[in-house]
Length: 237
Image (tube, rainbow, N blue to C red; front, side, top):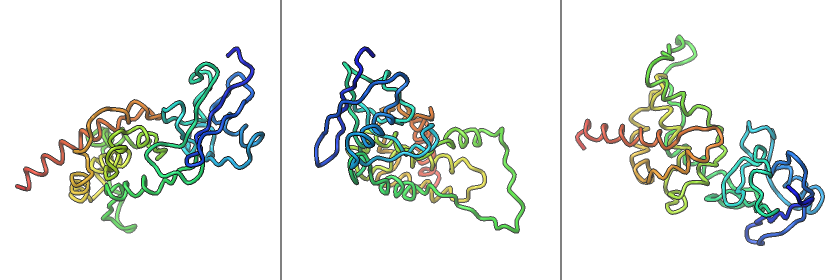
């Protein structure tokens, strides 16, 4: 970058955008920029972050219209004519400034039966898991999801259909469906085949494109579509 300052526009929801001139530095991240604004220009600016190293996902925001982890997004990769636009994640209610309400996101995990359905007690032996099985491979493929909601913010189906469960919840359902230790197969299939379920997905692939952990929710959703169709015909509905 040739300029010594960045023009940073922060979308603050109902109060509108604010513009700040922020000192430019080598290896500067978008989270560094937001932190500078809060510490030096406007202490009322609200935002979330925790680990700063791409482990927690809490610093996710829209950067030039794209959902990203701001701690791992270097300004040099996104700056356009010396300017960067930062806003709260799309598809979620804004609490204040860059902070969104994550409750709808997690409510949809519950709606997709994205919770472990156990049958054993602590007195039972630990269930054996075949790590080489095809089902276990599918389960492991999405297990690194950290609930950052980047895929949810990227999803145009969520934007147009608030009942849609979304890619993260559906990927979690697919993980559990393939987990030999989970006893909720029918409950999961019923949950993801109903209103707002996997068949609402238009397979545009934004979830997979923007996942910071290189996961593939679109393939997981395709798997759910196949399994719900098979279950429909098996049960003679």
